[in-house]
Amino acid sequence: MQANWVDFRAIKQAVTIEQVLARYGVKLKRSGKELRGKCPIHQGEGTGTFHASTEKNAFQCFSCGAKGNVLDFVAAMEHCSVREAAVKLRDWFSVGGILAAAAAREQPGNQLAPEEEAGERSEANTPLGFTLKGIDYSHQYLSGRGIDRQTAEYFGVGFFPGKGSMAGRVVIPIENEQGELVAYAGRSIDGSEPKYKLPAGFKKRQVLYNLKRAAEETEGLVVLVEGFFDCIRVSQAEYPAVALMGCAISEQQEQQLIANFRQVVIMLDGDEAGRKATAEIASRLVRYLWVRVVEVTEGRQPDELPLAELRLLLGSVFG
Ligand SMILES: [Zn+2]
Image (cartoon, rainbow, N blue to C red):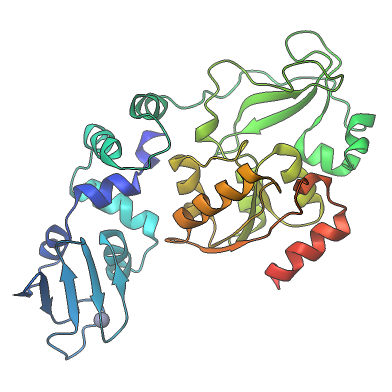
């Protein structure tokens, strides 16, 4: 589990462009604040087209147009994805857990408290040793929310008639990146609190809801929504979708998106929190992915829209 974990920000902070250039045996000449020389990426004749800035920890080639940070450099040299480049850099320069945590702490604007983040990283959600039996996929609560039986069965979502903490709730199985069941969320259907019950100790930040299924449906474009039912409805409209289970994105969720998709359509709720989160998430993802935003009418959320309207909205960006 930990072997697959890479922290892009920590790597960008821990590894300098000079170290990476040195590893490839690239020799450049200093010119003011920059290092300049032949481009190791396109290997052209120009002797000054490639510029590396030690201050910005970035590079740019004015001939082939390649540019970016240490991750982009390695990705270009190795013809691999940014994620694969991050794994290589982590291994070459031993960017370990302690260093990663220290770097994450220094990063301004980090949404998580460092202790919380470090704690979450050290421990993954454990797969459940059981499944709930007797789930009713055609319960009227689902049809009331516009979810047909076929879709409910595909997601494993339905009314749980049995005993225990999920009794009398509509249960939503949550799987990790590998498709292992790690939790059930239980939605109350009679107005009782809490609206959603999640097991104590479930680490929401490590999971993008519906990731495995969506990644199997597409390597390209995915719709990013807030809630379970948004995700299920968008999927019923025949667009692959994943849900944040809230309107904040964690670094783990960000990296799961980057690793599995090339393009993301952000479609959060039509309220102030949704709009603020959209801007924040778009600015984080745009560095790695093609990002588009679909705005939902004020006061609405995607799962409340008629399928025809969902298709119309998404069709305009999917083309
Ligand atoms: Zn070049």
